[in-house]
Length: 98
Image (cartoon, rainbow, N blue to C red; front, side, top):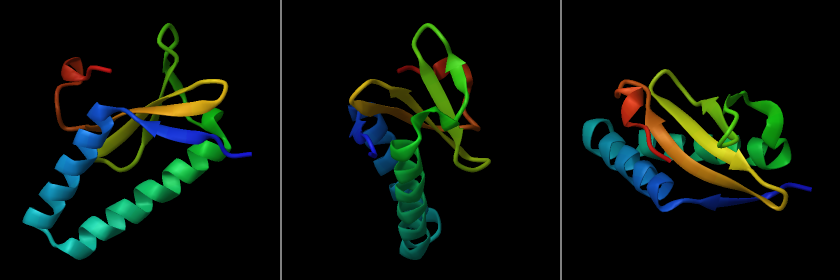
């Protein structure tokens, strides 16, 4: 049974910023494709949360590379999946906070 995905406030903000950028720099169609792609990945994660590599053992954070531009960070718990961030891979990884 798929787990519930719970978005953190930071992940919600990241997602909104990405969509704003896509609409501004490209067009609404590209933003809608990004929404569909993200939804597809989240459904995969909900079904099999351990499919992506564990990048931080202590915090139990996993990383899903969405594209060369973005990665999705999440934590699997017993009852749900916490979506922590959608991070721009071109930014300094030291600025990545959960």
